[in-house]
Length: 246
Figure 1 (cartoon, rainbow, N blue to C red):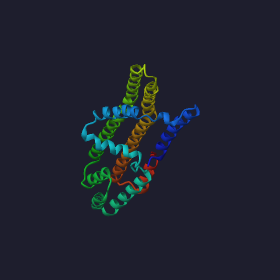
Figure 2 (cartoon, rainbow, N blue to C red):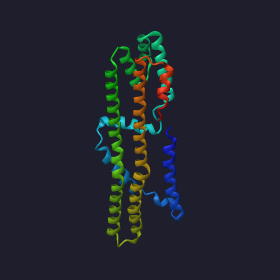
Figure 3 (cartoon, one colour):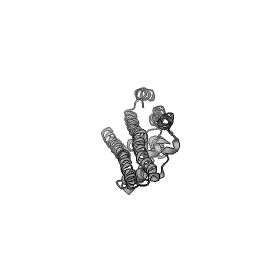
Figure 4 (cartoon, helix red, strand yellow):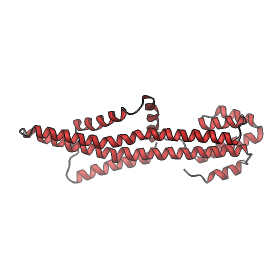
């Protein structure tokens, strides 16, 4: 779990609520069902209308990284590549085929398979780099949907404010309904601005960082695979990759 990002976002929300409380406000004033429906329902559905059905599952998978981030341990990668290098030096390409069949990471599995099948270095590098770039672009396009949500939230907050003020103006002769209308107006604006700037934008930025880190990790993997082809000693391979930090 990406505890740090989620914890900081939670602290940011608590800081806003604490500041509101210190000013004499009551938390119950921020609980407004109609305002929440207008802002979150409207922004969510407007965003969903732009997301192709085929993107729903990949987007949820990207969002799940906030709770179960992908494993990007350079030390673990170095150990795995060292095992591959030792196996090749000892038993040749047959060992790489066996390691590829047992490998759970798709990119590394394809890299080992290509290496075992005798593809030249340039083709392996070009094919894998293209796959990494394409995957990174696709994932960033998915995260763009969260950026769209961050744009809709404040706008729907304004819509909620306008609707609340319309209610106030239409009930100007009924003082009992004025407070509810004004509350909806201001709470809707708060929901939209706070949700966009405290929650959605920081978390979408964090997801972009994770996509970038995964790309760096995968490029290190490709470099390690090509080093195995050139017969680099596992100790030298470890030295080459230890300088890569995530």
